[in-house]
Structures are given as C-alpha cells and as structure tokens.
Image (cartoon, rainbow, N blue to C red; front, side, top):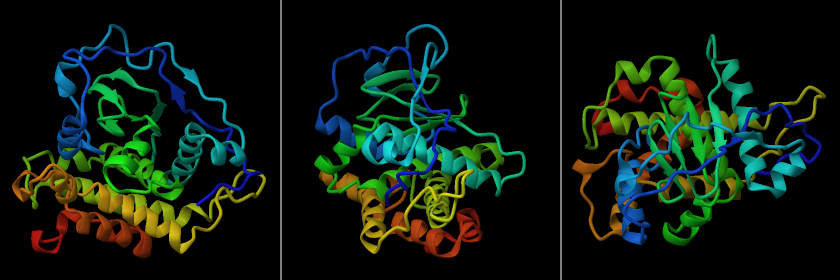
Length: 289
C-alpha cells in the first residue's frame, strides 16, 4: 500500500525524542533479540528489559522535536514519514469509532531511547507504553524483521505493526486492559487475547484506511493489492510466538504471550474482512483462538 503523493499528512503529532538512554551490560546479539522479541514483541510493558537498561533523568520525550512530514510523497520515500502518515489515518479512524477518543503520542526514534516502560530499542521492537499513552517505533526494526524473521516487511506490513500498537492504546483508554489484566503466559492467557485483539484492530483499520480522505478530498492511500495484503499476513506470521521460538530452537506454548503465527494471521484477517465487530477475543473459547 502506498500513499497518494498529493495527500496532506501535515496534521501530525509525530515526534523524535530529544535524548537517548544507555543500556547497561553491553549490546544485544541475535539470541538476545530472539529472546526479547519472543517475550515482548509488540507488547505493552518493557519494564526492566534489555540487560538492566538505565534511564536518564527527566520525562520521556523531553526536548523532542516534531517531524516535518507534509505529503503522501514524503510518506512513500521516508520511513519516519510513513509512520507519521499512519498516525494521521489512525487518529481519523479511531475518532469515529471511540467516543471521547484521546490520541496517543507517537515517537519515531533511532537506536534507543528511554521511556517510563524501560528502554526502547530496535532489538526490542515497536511497543506501546500505557503510563505515557505513547507508541515507540524505530524503523530499523523492519530491517531486523527481514534479516532475522523471514518477513518482507513492506509498506502495508509496516502499517499493520503501527496499527497493532494503536490497538493497545484503544484497549488502554477503553478499559479493556483494566478489565482483562495480565494473568501470565500461555495459549489461553489474557496476554495472548490482548495481542490477538490488537491484530484484529489493525486489520479493521487497514480495511477502511484506503477510504479515508484529507481535507481536500484526496484519498490518503491507494487501495492495497493482494500482494500487499499477503505481505501483511506474512508479517503477522513472522511475529507469532511459535515461529519466533522455533528460530531459537524450541516451541513452548505455555510461554506464549502473543499467540501463534496461525492465530495472528487469523485475527488480522478477521478484522480486515469483518471489521471491529469481529474483534472480541475475550469472549471466545480458548480452543477457538
């Protein structure tokens, strides 16, 4: 999926953090990346991760600057502006589906930065920090997906990942997180149900995203092709717990926190085909997840 080059995406709040944090204990290698992503990829709480990462003083995002992204052409040619464009579409979509919608803050960073939920880095992956109501994404993570997890991570796949994190924000502000708190890991856990619902939310948003227009009536996005939809499903497969664990040589469903590749593809497709009404993962029997 590509943006209409003439679409106006200037109404963005996307920011670049103004400072970074040091990670104690050295860098993270491939096995460390696999272990981190297996437990927290696209997750909601990164407290204490990454080898005892230490935060610098001040509030997350202090001294940050707003990204300068104006048109769909910027989104097509710059990864950070693609994230900014996604923010504009996500806000417009969720404003019409959630009463009293409160938009999250999106931070696009390079390398690593500190948050109230711990240290954000491209090895940990994109995530949502509930205390801040903020989404953090390093576009370099998409290259990690290509190199380590057999994903092509094209444009629609990238938008799926941003939409997934927005899904966690919706769960936060609508009380879903509070009503279904983390009760541990496993294929029937609230953690897995939370992640699969966020996948479904991302699918529902992407289905409608191509219909959204800017103030001049220009469509933000071109209609996705079958190949691009397949690419997004490929990304959902790549971030399944079983696939990630198998990359590290094991598969333990009782340690799952995000769901299998098959489940993630199913719930993304459910949202894309059937809309938000199909996304209640908490009322489904575990055998049907």
